[in-house]
Length: 117
Image (cartoon, rainbow, N blue to C red; front, side, top):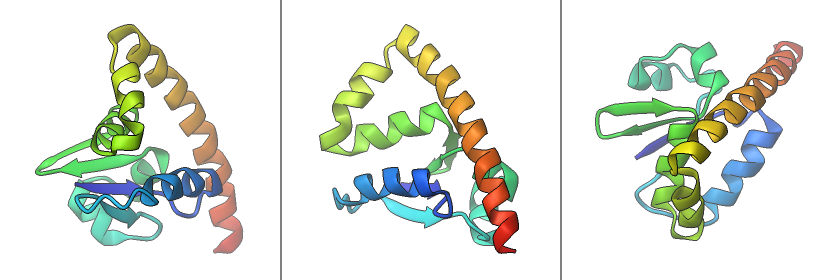
């Protein structure tokens, strides 16, 4: 499983760093910042990759809240999050909240990236 995340976003990086500490061998962590290979592997452009967390598991690419479910399911310490957030009503609310938060993080990070370029 490959996890495509935005290492240039401080909040995103902090969260991913927590997951990385669990040292799950089946997870490859891929920084999508200026990463053309990530775009090819996911068939997503840089804007789409910056906008949401993505996971490629076998040949399937998922993004957003669904990607978090896959990630949490794979990490024993965070499986309780998978079990809770997979519940239909909870997942629907989680998806909406995730999209709102991700949108504002994307806007914030987009400004940060422009300052460094």
